[in-house]
Amino acid sequence: MLSLALQADASSPEGMDFRFLADLNAALNAGALVLIIAGLVAIKRRNEGLHKLLMFAATAVSAVFLGSYLVYHYFVGSVKYTGEGFLRPIYYTILLTHVVLAIVQVPLIVLTILAGLRDQRARHRKLAKWTAPIWLYVSATGVVVYLMLYHG
Image (cartoon, rainbow, N blue to C red; front, top):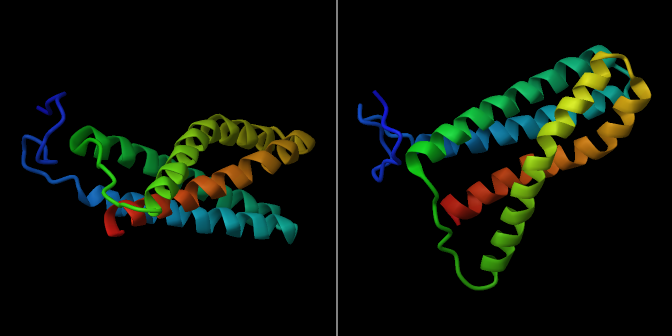
């Protein structure tokens, strides 16, 4: 049975080490970024079928990311940024905007998808003008935060 307490050694009582999820999360963010860009290119080329497929794929990848992120932080907890100098305020600025916009993007994505599925094209386009850049920013900065935190 899994304990509700955070594990200091980043592993479950069964001994599984969950630190690998940080790498997976960065890969999922990068994958979502590529899928969103491809989806935007598809709709610019008026390929609605491909656009829909790519945006559903981006949504699925982002949902898997969210689940993986929650599991990671449940078992590993928070990881402190150890960078110094001019990079420190840059990291925290990116992190703050990333977190705030990550929270904002979830309902925006849902509303945008629902408008598209209901064939409310004007509403879908209006929402997408906000959702797409926020989602792109959150996906890209997720990778940047990962690189700065684990490889900086």
